[in-house]
Image (tube, rainbow, N blue to C red; front, side):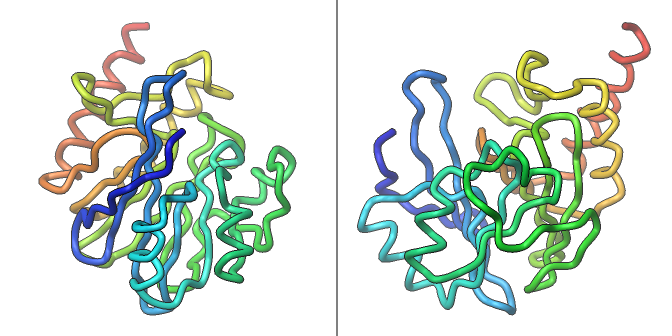
Length: 211
């Protein structure tokens, strides 16, 4: 993949950079979130020099948060470059190529007030990250996709550890209050994100009953 050359501010304090995967035909998104504890990077890919310069200017970095074992991407490079720690859910550890520095528990409140939300079923150690900043921001890996012309969707069944469990995990998101959703794959939702999610969630439950 070619390194990202553009950094986009999704909403105040939340930034995204992307690289297109030529084989899978999908954008791989990485995020930076400014918190009271400093800047955290979520599923980061090493960007081009211009983007890296802007990321460095955001503030003091304190960590890398992984949404699953398969999303470690360039976490090792970020750890070395910024001298920060890598956080991952405890169930991601066995499948990670790098050794996480901090193992995260479900519901744990991390530095900067970010909460880890375990979402089993998609990938090993699948975890969303939630913050009350900006009225509520939810950052997701493979638990939900938001691809062009598809809208919200689950990860295709062939890539899931347990597709039924992945569906059940969505109920955990319904209890959160958020205005913004950002995804590892697909465009962010910055208007009526909770409403759009709940509509998808209800449709998913109906499909489950029919199957």
